[in-house]
Amino acid sequence: MTTAAVSAPRATTVEATKTRQPFRWGQVGTGMIITLVIVWCFLPFYWMVVLAFRSNAHTYDTTPFFSHVTFSNFRYAFNTSINQFGRSLINSLIIGSVVTFVAMVVGVFAGYAMARLAFRGKGLVLAAILGASMFPGVAILTPLFQLFTNFGWLGTYQALIIPQISFSLPLAVYTLTSFFADMPWELEQAARVDGATPGQAFRLVIFPLAAPALFTTAILVFLASWNEYLLSSVLSVGKATVAPSTVAIANFTAGPHIVPYTQTMAAGLVVTVPLVIVVLLFQRRIVSGLTAGGVKG
Amino acid sequence: MTVAGPAAESAEQTTAVTSPPPTKRNKIKTGEGRLAFLLVAPTVVLLALVVGYPVVKGIYQSFQSEPGLDPATGFFSNTTHWIGLGNYKHWLLQQCAKSGGGTGKCPTGTLGSQFWSSFWVTIFFTVVTVTLETIIGMCFALVMHRAFRGRGLVRAAILVPWAIPTAVTSKLWIVIFDPQGILNKVLHKHILWTSSQWPARFAIVIADVWKTTPFIALLILAGLQGISADLYESARVDGASAWQRFTRITLPLVKPALAVAVIFRTLDVLRMYDLPAILTGGANGTTTLSILVVRQLTTGLNTASALSTITFVIIFAIALGMVRLFNANIIGAQAKGTK
Image 1 (tube, rainbow over the protein chains, first blue to last red):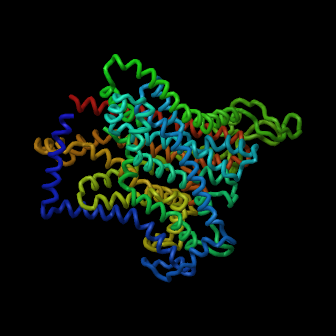
Image 2: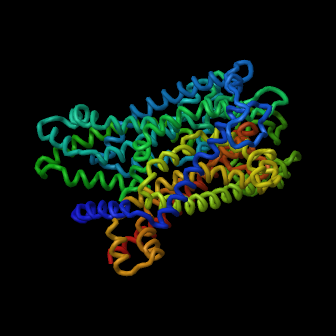
Image 3: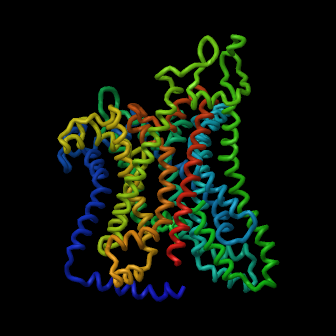
């Protein structure tokens, strides 16, 4: 505690002197690598954007900037006589919303208990939840494939939603636990001293404080569901009316004798742009959510 | 399990610090226990249903024969029977049923013959991608940690490859890796990236490293930010070189964050499916264990169950080994630090 209090102001003075220095070769090197990192992250994505707006006849044109600009690729992507891409976006939204809702509603209670309450067998429960998320998708896929075949559920929403609980619920519990562990619990203690039950303290004091953490966790869970491919591709058995967008993109076609690169990039862009916007808007929160727990200390 | 460590510890610490005097404690504790049970129960029940039940059922099925022609009677039967380790022998010892009864070596081209090649390809992907991602990610993180201007921009940029769904990433790299695509044009080469063995494998490595390195950098950066600047300052005063500061201060202190990132990534690559399944379709020696399981699904479910069981046993064994390995090192580093 004392060391932290001492080191904090000193660290800021070091930062201040560093930024005030007029010129250093080290900074040039740093700047170059920073640029490299940004180029690394954006370059392939940039190429996707360029191709999405390029006429299919010029697929192999390697002009590095926008050329032969057209919107036909997007019209193609949403043409229902070729692909069910528009439908798949709605499917992804339905599946993602239900999965996120279930994982959050169930996970928030477990996360609170893990972070806040002392109880016997806590380590065991935590190990079980983490262990559950460690199983490879194929380990639950094989039995579920048979089970859903017997139920006649292959190619239905429930067959796509239920298996996703296996990874989304541990993710929610794990992220919420580390968020909750970091919250100002003195306030809860104060409420308890004033005579509130643990339940009341949770509902009236902690829940409003926890809203940003809940929101961030919900975004992470939704993204995980939106990006899922293995379970969905097998359990949807190619049924386009329920398959999510990842499956639709993987099976994307543009009719016979056409290399559908530009159209696929257009569809990929439609899937990606909302995610990138959400992620950039909430980047601070998402980074804290991703790095919470695992990297403390 | 190491991951849980810090969170659980800090939770216990806060409870210990803020808990009321002992007289009140017992009463609250029993109430807490009951409340905790109610709060945790739905999660445990749900996970038991969607993870526990399928996994146990899969293990049970893996010891059953496939429904089909019974070699003893010559009739088709829908019932399965206990065959012990038969399905495991099929994969691990490459024993396939012969038409004349009995077992023999699996003919090349069948799924059964591909187990060991899939296993080694999966290990190859794991070792190569995790090593590259850790080294490059470490460099990125060190640079971001030193930079004061543009750090926000980099952090935003890093989330872009992470946020793109793997299915889209795979399609994007198919386009880039096309024989007539942009990469060959830039390199002035004519590499058949996705249709010959080693280029196909490296295509997958490149795509995976592109997508995940920034994410690892982010995790390491968070670890770096927890290191006090005091340590570096006093080391510098004592005349430590930049390399010494890196190996004696940065590495030991960032190790817990690094260990978590490496373990998580290893588990992820060991079960990799999306990227090779879409990018190469598992062709040309890029069939991972997960792809092999999915292919086996349509030919025989109980044999597939054995393979998925083998897959997760491998993953658990490697995870456990890594947790042990890193834990030992972490404890070692901490012991050194306190001396």
